[in-house]
Image (cartoon, rainbow, N blue to C red; front, side, top):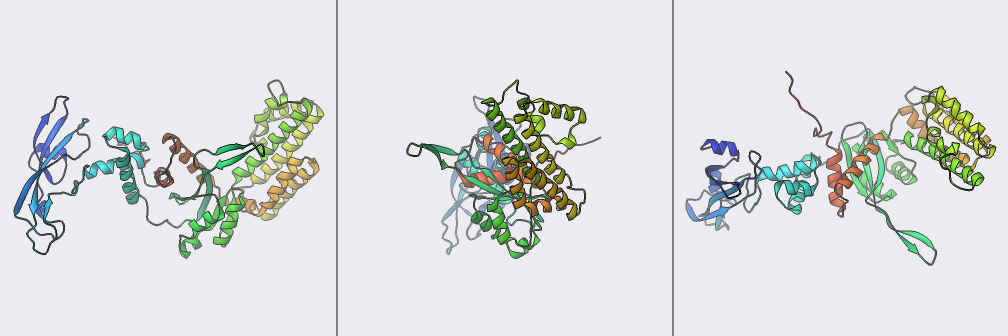
Length: 442
């Protein structure tokens, strides 16, 4: 490079000949071509010796020293003297500024990194660098093609979970006097739970065919490497996994089992309150004030808090307190079963606690408890597999939180292709090393 200003600019292939300031204090950097390869025809590679005319280009570049910088590149148009070449004339170009490009390569790369690796929105990156929304989105697509792997790595534990794409839309039908769903779009996500690859991909639609189609895009070796598949209690996912990954162990996530049990306790509490009091629970009704404590695990609650709760429930009218205590006991029996996770239990011990849960639900005589027991019985093999293996679908739930946060930051998406790309970039930042903080010590 010819001078110190050229070194400061750091744009390979051009030389700074001067710098001028306009009325607003914006520096205008004058450039000339300083690359021998720029005189070679891009089609045939012939080195031209015949200049045709002069051309002026003003490509957009990154800010320099914290200030917006404008470039004026005075370059030449050359004649290609190779008789067999269809290219008559061509202008000088360098790798950072290709022909007909209005942005430097490093600016395009920075736009892609800002959105894909640093969590900025497309509109925010466009404002920061003074470019349009489509320009930034094109840079994001190019960055995604380079940053994301072309083929999914082999995974041992695969997590499958769905997330709603936007908000559902409903319409009232006067003929039936009911509300019907007009639009309810979903994405099904596939996550590497323990390999560090993050979100492997998404498929639009919440159907068995959606899951099966995504799995079938992989070869037989990839399918054979999958040992566990973690899902929630969804028959759609289960049928697709059993058909396409028959050798994998299907696991039901324990979080959803606990969520189902807590929901059962809340439903019983609401039902008996309305039946006895003729209204919903509110402040002053002890069963309503204990609603949060009822959904906590008794094994993780201090006895000084647990015993007063039981006493308060027994002090309530019998029609309220007794059903709630029975439902709570059924929930705790199920929690005792799930507590065997990571304790290296035998199958016999698992099914003994499962049998105790069934007996508790049957003896309660509460419809909600019996429904919970039927659901657990339907998924008993998958629940036992979750306890024995310790595999959890927590990775998918964590990625769903990132997906929803990204959608809120973008104020929603209209293009599902753009949403899937930006979602995958957002959920793979840790695996790609974008969240690592590098500091110097000493």
